[in-house]
Amino acid sequence: MAGQNPLFIAQFGTTLKQNQASPGPWWKDGWQGKMQLWKAFWVCFVFGHGIVIGLGSGLMIVSMVLGFAVDAGSLDAGFTGLATGGTVLVSVLE
Image 1 (cartoon, one colour):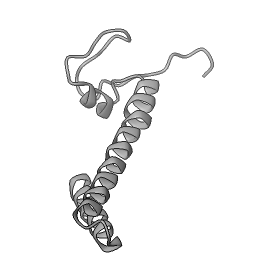
Image 2: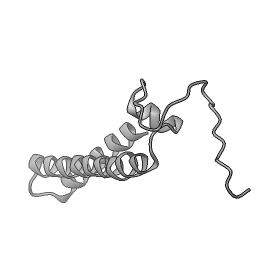
Image 3: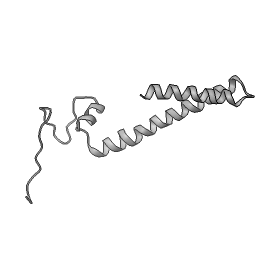
Image 4: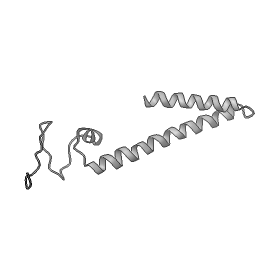
């Protein structure tokens, strides 16, 4: 087995050279395994999740501040805003 080249099967009926750009969108290339592994992991997974978590946290903070802006003397307004932001976030991400 030593010295044999790996066998690649063209699952989708197309062959791509290593440095050839694919005609599809970047997210589809990553899903179908046509993207390099380091790009799929670092760009799509790590930075993609960072963006989603950052936007979600920002939405939660803004909704809580808006809740406090409605009634500054009450903690219930802040918690209501936080719960509303959480509900919106869960419904968007699902």
